[in-house]
Each structure stands twice: as structure tokens, then as C-alpha cells.
Length: 101
Image (cartoon, rainbow, N blue to C red; front, top):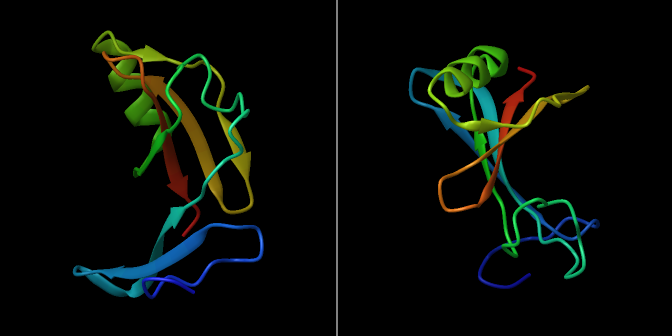
């Protein structure tokens, strides 16, 4: 542990928090480094990706597409939530996560 950050066995860290309007609902922010040679951020050539939590992923993606944002047509669902991706105007891949609450 360094800087008060305890890493998970997979290598990243999970920061747990609660919202002011629903303090009983636990949320989390994940910091997860990827291998240098990952292609997970493609088509971006940047060595990082931002992941943002959203409510109603399908609605957010539809609105962004309507506004002309480059939206990846693939959406992935897991037992912990759904993921979708967009490209920002500077060529950064952005992951949108709708956590399963």
C-alpha cells in the first residue's frame, strides 16, 4: 500500500463512496492500469481511457449519437453493469458504465 491506496490482487484499486441523495447506495470508482501493449483503448492511440458512470446507458448513448458524437455500436453487459464507448473530439476513447445497483 502506498499513498493510502490498497491495491486489489488483480492490480488496480477500488474507491468506495456514497451519494448525498442516497447514502445507503454504495458506489465505487475504479483505478485500473492496463498493460502497455493493450489494444483495449483502440481506436484511440492514447495510453489511457476515462471511464464515467452514467444512469441509463442506452439513453445516454442514443442522445450522444443524436448530437453527432462517435458512438461505438457495441454495448457489453455483465453481472456488475453495462458498458458502452464513445470517442471524444480529441481522439480519446471514453468508457461509459451503468453500474448494476
